[in-house]
Length: 88
Image (cartoon, rainbow, N blue to C red; front, side, top):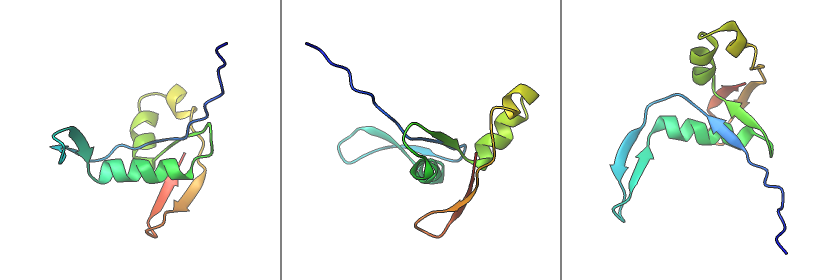
């Protein structure tokens, strides 16, 4: 019998610089501050929650008022490197 367990994800979205590189095993990978910030924002999320950075919010919220209303400001959070991130 097949059973399906609930899978709760934490997601962090950021808009920032990244670079496509080939890793030691020859696989393509993306590195850079844009990826690092997305990972930090994700670390602030609870299971089942999607958080976005201020840079992502600023771009998407300018597209329409309907998009802007999808977000709520949750405040500034400090990561393990004592870097502050505003999350929505």
